[in-house]
Image (cartoon, rainbow, N blue to C red; front, side, top):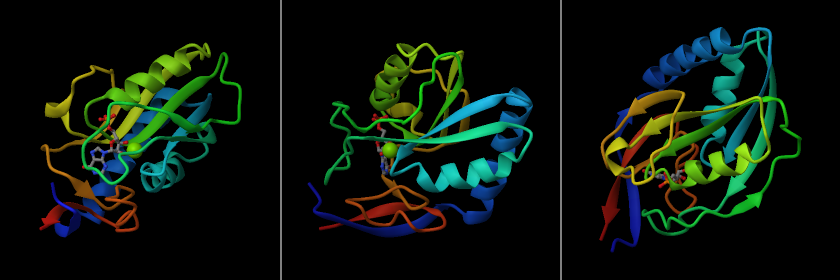
Length: 180
Ligand code: IMP
Ligand code: MG
C-alpha cells in the first residue's frame, strides 16, 4: 500500500474540461428549459465541476443549488463500499426535477445509494450527472443521464478530486503517482 501520492501528468486539460462542461450545460438547458431544477452537489469532490456547470446553464432553467456530503475514501484510494450521509440537503424535493452532480463514478455504490435515498422522497424525476466515469470499475449498475468523460482505472486528482484532501484546487484532471 502506498502512503502518499504526488501530482502526475495532465489527463484532461482545463480547456477540454471547460468545452465539455459547455456541452453538458447545453444538454441540461435543452432538457429542462422553462422548468425548475434542483441541482445537488455531492461534496466535496463535485464542488468545482458543480459551480462551473451551473454557471454555464444560464437563465433558461430555474436552477436551485443544494449541497450534500457523504462519507469519503478517507486516506485510501479504494472505495469502502459503505456510504453514509454526513450532511443532507435543506429542501423538500417532492414533485421536483432533481439532478445529482458528482465528480466521478467508480464502483457505483455511492450513486446507487443516493438514487435509492432520493427516490424515497418522491421527486418528479431524478437524474445523475458525472464528470468522470471509471466504467470498468462498476460493481453496482446505476443509470447516468449526463457523462463528461470515460477514463481508465487510474487514480486521478484535481478539478475537485482529491487524495487525502489534497489537490482539489487544480484546474486540470491529473493522474496521481504513488510515492513509495
Ligand atoms: P464509488 O462509490 O465507488 O462509485 O466512488 C465514487 C467516489 O469515490 C467519488 O465520489 C470520489 O469521491 C471517489 N473516487 C473514485 N475514484 C477516484 C479518483 O480517481 N480520485 C479521487 N476520488 C475518487
Ligand atoms: Mg465524491
